[in-house]
Amino acid sequence: MFFTGIPKTMKAVVIDGNEPKVKDKIRVPFLDDGFILIQVLAVAANPMEWKHVEFEMGPQGSILGCDVAGVVVAIGSGIPSDEFKIGDNVCAFVHGGSFRKPGNGAFAQYCAVDANITFKLADSMMFNKNPPLKHGEDFVEIREGPVDSIETAATMPVALITAGAILVHELGLNLEWEPAEPQIDSPVLIWGGATSVGQILIQVIKKLNAFAKIITVASKDHEDLLRHYGADVIYDYHDKDVLDQIKSNHNDITFLVDAVSSEETINQVYKCASPNSPATVLQLEYLNIEQIEPKVRRDDVKMIGTLIYLISGYEVKIGDYHFPANPQFRKDLIRYIKFINPKLIEGEIHHIPTKLYHHGLADIPMFTEMIKHGKNNGYKLVTSLNDEETQQDAN
Image 1 (cartoon, rainbow, N blue to C red):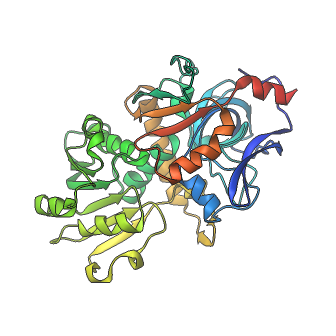
Image 2 (image 1 turned 45 degrees about the horizontal axis):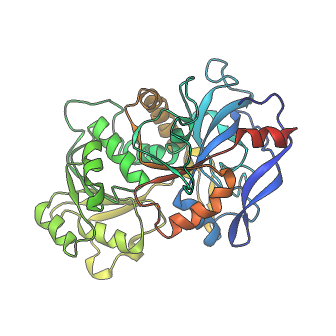
């Protein structure tokens, strides 16, 4: 599984015109100070990948992918020797499709990750032990549970860091595990509780006792799972009167998260804000008050967003958008990652249901289409990279 010699080139999934393509002879990323190079063993897909391609949010030829897990094969300067060593299992977030580092992304055989925001995993972690695929099957389904394999580790970074960005940076909550009293004595609404961010956010909110009550909107198909994670009340977005149900039962929701973040859902979430108190609506895209129907806009309902790409500490360019560097964002998220990393190893935070494929980088174009068309409902899509293929390309 470990590499004796790091090659100069590799295979990777890059933006090529208006689609993601697997290409070879891509240069292995340069190792900056404070970064570690990992041999990629598993990756997970997110909505941001297909959007980077379709909406030209990343430069042509840039490597895609943000969720990655693998093994450390090289360590850059400036990293204390007691933090990481060659052979460590890790998972991390990386800004795939980046203008600043277009030659680095998760969907590749090698990836450079920032040591300060990398999760260290148990030494015993190996490939998933599920039975092999049967004839005609495309994937193995892995039930939710503790992160106990490289593949399930790959599902965690984006969603887990996003939860920290919301709770620690945006809300300034304390990093205290299972405090006796709610940190905020009012409910939170999470629209899209079955999304990857929604499922992880519910768990972290519960463990930090962040709010007095967790209200979520998702398909009733996911009710048992979301209650298991800590949701108190679940509404089905398929119900035509779902907004009336929420507003009639809850008039005190002052913090609302749109984990779907479309123009339709942001308007639905906005309408659920407490009619009697100032409120804040948080979205995960680039939506603002202009997307809210003029007749329902209120001066006392604030819209904010969080952007985990800012964890780099540098200015971020995404398409035509420019986001200034936010040193405090990086500082808060580093503190959060150091706090929650042991909890991840101990199984206190679970990975969500996962569909594990086995064609490596060749699965990625299919993943982007599936997510674009909503065919990953409630699941994280993961593929494992064939170790023998990596070895062959290196020689």
